[in-house]
Image (cartoon, rainbow, N blue to C red; front, side, top):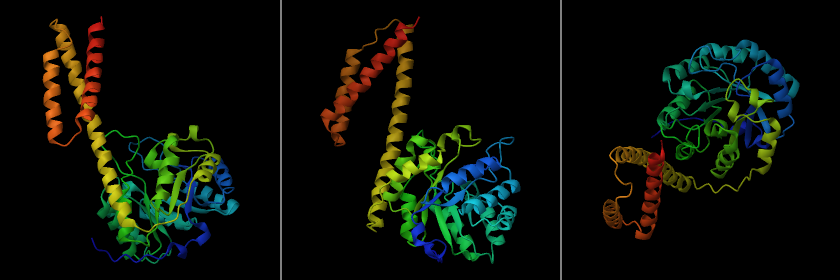
Length: 362
């Protein structure tokens, strides 16, 4: 994949002392009081340099809270004036861009739902021609590196050279601990292709819950990402959007206090290959768990069928044949016999337990 991206160093729009870049603020600008209270608390944290808030909220279904629009931009403008924090918001169409510029928003970002649509990105790029403003681009919902790069290229062709990428994770059809699978190999490959492109990680949208924020934030810096975007709210439990992933500004300070910034190795190729292997393990683990769940569903059906036909749960001959056959298959594939025996015994134990529960039901 080749590209002619022309990217100004992040130092062109940030001071070296502002790095790593920490962006924070509520998922949504809900009220003037909420915006100002959160901004004032964040201004007490030296590391925070950009105040974010959702002014327009793209929701899956209508009649949900979709933001306050232009009214909220006035709150952002006041927060900037009273705290000294620079401001950043998401824009999804030319009208959003025009209003953001009208209210002196310092940095724009394009969200994952917009990046997935090249027509939307092009419309935003067209209205930004001749405007000197930093623009951050979130990765698309689906794990498509070319689509992510394409959005950056469209902005670059419009004259935007103060560019950054935001890694917010990807939709994953399997159940996972994360709201959006990090798939670290994708932002690492982006960094390999464009070493001067700053990449900001969004632990809030990757994790979807507070308990995983610190883990994701640390991993981001371990992988040489350039900053974090973490959602904070003065009263997160009462937030109108994404309440589970937001934290109080004081909790953000605590999280940042425990982050370890390691010396950069610069060996992006090594990290990229390592993350490629790890992502494959994650995918296989999800597949393995899914297969186990489906196997246990079949066991339940077998248990019910045995009960209805008054057959004993334990079928020793069948179990003996399974062990012999599975161990032989495992041996041919290079799986340690002792290890596989333990796995099969655990699965069999759970199978017996589930069938026993079915037999004991009245």
